[in-house]
Image (cartoon, rainbow over all chains, first blue to last red; front, top):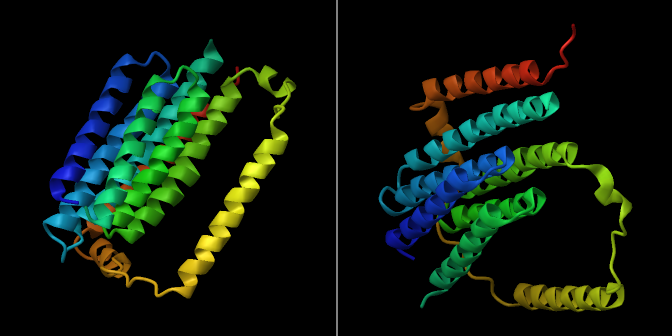
Length: 88
Length: 165
């Protein structure tokens, strides 16, 4: 397993998530595709941290921030979805 | 091909397949379940990259928090007529047989694994280093993220409250 393997995986995951974000008609599906995008970015951070700077944990710290921001995004997005559907 | 490369290929195939199901499934509930699979597999990938604390955080925050929240919303919005149908099909006997065989196989394998010499773990746990990072170099972003989470909480409560005339 080299850095390139993981980067290719994260690029493919990012592309799939982007496709879903652009092609989904349902708001919930779009939020799920966004989670895929966040995960691709997090995999990138963790891979660079593991392969290039194994003695520092900076990349893993960034992944923690990514997870926290994704949680906040999901909460706000789902509250908006509830509001939207309640008004219909 | 080394063992870790094989495990990585298996993870990668499952992650890409699950992501395709998330994106292409017609039923939102089905794509949510596929998303759960993808998130668990990404946690496994973090474990493969020697990021044990990240794997635990991914499981706790994503699978335990975000995804359960999503399933709540989906079930709130879906029509409840699905509950009236039968929840099991006519393959109960073969399903029980299959799961029994699987359980026996797993127990035998675990027993054989514990009797043999377990391979040594490589890499150090990264939790202590991460804690030092968050309390030292990343202290200001850490506090800002807690403020962001508080703002998200207040915003979600504000958005989803009932409107009174």
